Length: 339
Image (tube, rainbow, N blue to C red; front, side, top):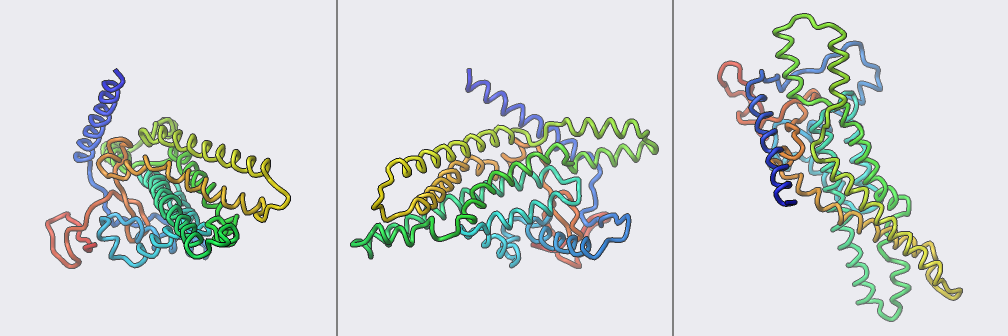
């Protein structure tokens, strides 16, 4: 019975996604090179912010490049390698900047928020999970191989918990869940480009729309259950975070209870190691999010159409570049650079 209900639920998601994509094919496409509307003159700070936002999002989340095209971009490679550094909160710092650029100016895009959540959890599993676990195992093996006569002192001085500062470890540990929930709480206020196309098509047929209907459509838009089944995964993520905190509490309490006066390792060093390995445990438990990174499965389970950012920092529907610059296409087609 459970297996049948899961299959029925998955089939409903597939049917819904097919209907949405059929509707998307009939709607009028938006210009991928559209420029932002500037209502008033920007201040110096706002101009700098929009310039940095445009550059970062265009290179890291482009609308016309696959992963292979992005790997040819040095800025994308630099940001990705920075997020692979397991120490001092490098990953959380880069993700904080990207999330800020996605959320402001508002409203944010639904797909970009979902994609950020998957990006955050995916890099957490890779960097704070696998890479950090390998780092810790390498340090322990080095102490065992070359400092076996004084193994405890070697681990106390060079252990993985002492590689980075405690603030950096806590920033990476807590930031992994804080950033995800900041993004998730903004999902009800996000927009989707399919909805934009519907509104644009309706505005072509109906020239005037009353303010009452606009307010009603906005209130209904906030009630849409966006993100598909992402909420279930985030509930799982909270349970994993709570479990890692429970393990941290048990380990810290155990070290305090079994503490001896002549012990050469301080409680603070024990706490550093406990934080490190509980962070690794929490990161490894985020592996189920990797399934959502597969594009067809992501669309079926989240019902969000892919988008990206153009040269002006505008979020537009994703479209692979198929013509080099300067090529002449058919009437109404858009010529874009190859990735």
